[in-house]
Length: 560
Image 1 (tube, rainbow, N blue to C red):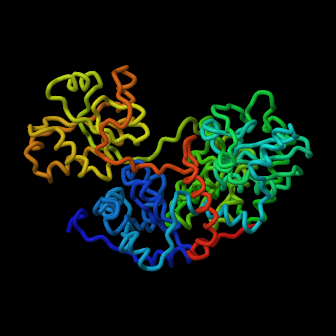
Image 2: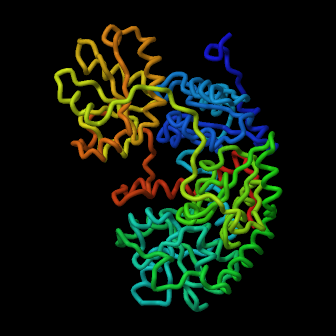
Image 3: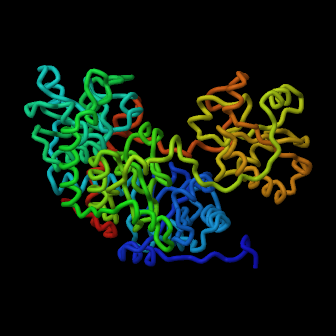
């Protein structure tokens, strides 16, 4: 029996639960679109987009014999039949040898009594709520922080989110200090012990973790989280700033890494916290052995900022700024039970990040003894990916000519919906790879009754389009539709980026949606126009996460 027709093995919800409780390695992958995933999923079901399997698998699932369980709705609730099975077969084709389907999918998990969580990055968010409950992390309401600002009090407000999130909206006077940077930078930003430090994020998690990081590290300043972040600020009727550029890197402050005493103190503080959390140590020689070892998943994460990573990093390491690694752990490391090694160049950021991962029950190590010679690679990491199918390409100018002809070909755009809405080739249809069959039927119907001689596929850099082309060819052959009997497939060479670079006309907005915009879940705290009801509902959901953790019972979280 061939690989494409052989019956796939299954694992029951109970078997998955037993693996989690036993701390065995397991990757429970939810291959549905992110919006659908966010409505309901098991706690440790990592979102693993069906469309990106070839792009992400070899990086996010580095061990080819790791136990993988793939899930979808299980009852057709997402409108796509057999998504988990198709994803599983694609993983097998990529060399994974222990791939099974979750018996019954989401419905099977629910029917077996499994707890279901909504939203995204739930392990990290629920852990943050547990930290606040156990440690009573100090916080101030938005009105209290506004009063300090109005009184021109001696206070520093630090925003623990990514810099791009900070630029979208920020607390008046706030400074961007992404989470892993806090312990390393705070003594420079607030050198006087009398200065109060307020930590904020958009909602709750990163402000709780950031505040508790400073408390755990023993800084002398009074520290508090901005209660409920920018959501709480808006619900209090207060104004946010937009487009700010204040950062710990601002020129009016010297960098902590230029002050050996500041760096040494931060490293000592972080190491003390990591030791108390049970973080383990390793060295370059042992790391090299682990990298060659089979039978164990290893993630090597560089927790410094992206610019530092690009300047120089360890071979094989993945850029994962520490604050985001704690916030989105399952996205960086979908194999629960894997071994994680963290590296930095200062002794503070890796230790603080590791202290949180250890409390989240990861086997986590900090790399000690790495010299500048070990940081031998430059630039972005070249991600391991399978060679895409060989499909005939068409240059942007030729496609422009085709589109101007009476026999203009349909253009299928596999970009993320945000990118498609921002700009796309005129006339292009937005298509989700997970719903390609439905989109193709819609596009054929819209084309009229005549034959379709050509179809052109595009994506931002053409790579996603190349992977999707083989799938589309199979669908066309299986459909047996007379309109598609002589259709040739082409790839826009260089993708939409090449079209833009050629300064050809662009179209904007939701002009031709052949698939619904469910590839991304709109966070209730995102942007500047979130409804008050959605923001309050999000906070209410976060407040209930600790109770859900108790019902689920698979997490093994502990709090210092």
